[in-house]
Amino acid sequence: MITADKMSNAEYHATDAISSSDVKAVFGKSLAHWKHRAAFKPTIAMSIGTAVHDFCLEDGENTVRGGADRRGKQWSDAFAEAEAHGKLLLTAGDYDLARNVADSVMFHPAGAKMAGPDTVNEASFFAKCPMTGMDIKCRPDSYDEKSGVIFDIKTCQSSAPKDVEADIRKYNYALQVAWYMYVMQNAGYKADRFVLVFVEKTAPYAVNCCELTMEYIDWADVQMHKALADIKQANDTQVWESGYSIGINSVDIPPWLAQDAASTDDF
Image: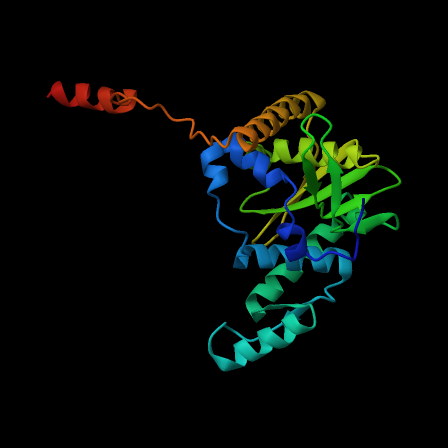
C-alpha cells in the first residue's frame, strides 16, 4: 500500500509497524534498548533535514522562514500558525542553510533525479513480513516507481568518500538500504536500487551520491532478517535481553596505554 500525500511524517511514526529504525536499534544495541527507546520527537537537526527534503522535492512550499531565534511569544505564535497550516517554521539561519543544501543537491546530476517526473516524495509504504507475519514500513525521501530507484538524503559533516564510508558503518545505513528494498518489494513495488545522497551541512555543501555493492546489501539483508527474527521472538516471549554479560567482566589496560607506561619506566 502506498499513501503518498495522505500520511504526515508524524502519522507515519505513530503507526505500530516495524521500521528500519527499529531494526537498526536492535542490531546496533539490543532488544532491551529497543524496547525502552524514547518516543519519536523531531529535533532541530531533523527539522532542517525535513526542510531540505521540502526544498528539493516540493520547492519549499511547506517550509516557512521565521525570525533570528526561537525565543518569545512572536516565535510561539508563528510556530502555532505554521503548524495549523501543516507547515514547518525554521529560524532564518536554519531556513537559509536548508535552502543552500537543497540547491547543491539539485545542482548535482544524480541528486536532481530525486525530483524526476516519475518520482513520489516521502510516501509511506506498508507490507506484511512473510517470515514473521509482522507489519513493516518505510518512508523513502523519494522513489522513482518507473525505474525502481529509491533516494535518501543524508546531511553530513563531510561527503568525502572515506567519511561517507565511515558514516554508513556508524549509522548502519546498509541495514536501511536492505530494509527499504525489502519492505517495498513485499508491498508489490519494484525496488532494486538505492541511492544515498550525502550532502555537507556547510559551504560548499559538497554532494556525494553512492550505491552499496550487492555484497554489502546481501550482508545487511542477513543482519536485518536476524534482527526481525529477534524482535518476533521477543514479542512472543516478552523477554528483552540487553546482550550484555550477567557476570563480572575483566577490563584490561589498552595496548597503547601499556606501551606508554613501559616507555615511562625506561627513565
